[in-house]
Length: 326
Image 1 (cartoon, rainbow, N blue to C red):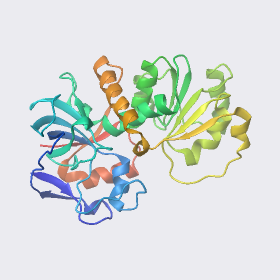
Image 2: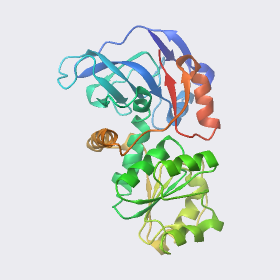
Image 3: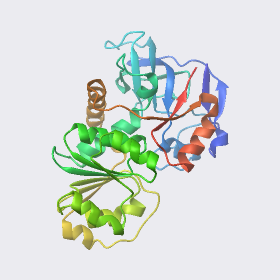
């Protein structure tokens, strides 16, 4: 079968499409014939060999997210049968042979049924983005219906799902994006208000949209740029969840003291097993009920994975970047 394999760490050029043996599922594992796979920013970090959360043994096939059909089942698996449509969310699986491939094996509890009405492309858009959105909103920020939630950088794969979940839960959502295309996607995903990224000059706009209080929760995707502004605009006793950051910053901690605001870090790798399983079941329910509807971004062939990695690093994402697998 075809798979992307890397034999050394480095740039996108280390990702090679090659022929490998089909993996065999062991006890409590399933094999999935994949039709689509998600491409995530953390996979570009893993490729370099410098990612603090995970440095794989080589050779290595990347990929944690995908969607397809179960074509082989290991002993002990009772809740799936061959032919079941599933999406894969294998970030914390004990075994994951990689979704950048025609077939992959992982723990049976790392896959979830994909409704017939949902395409494989949309199924592959879940995984890390959807579980991150759920964890940010419900396990870290612990949002409540009726609260104001600011999604600061809402037009990417995680951001759009965050908007949809918060809106479906009964929050009033303010989303930001840097382009007109991105803002249109954020609006279509259910944000009540859509703005350019918040700066010192637009703090008063946010306050006016929240009756002078500020957002109760902020989901932040670029903390090294935005955290100080977030602290100035957050409501008293508000929660800021840092989902992404690309550097360091200097700010006055008194800003957090004045609001008694909480700054909460998030890395999906740290999710306890019970919370990860909770997230997986919740995402499945949100998908079936229509609360979430993943936005598909650019789609690449498996052989063009290098181009996909270049794009996810260098271009502002609108929706989820995917691989189409023959």
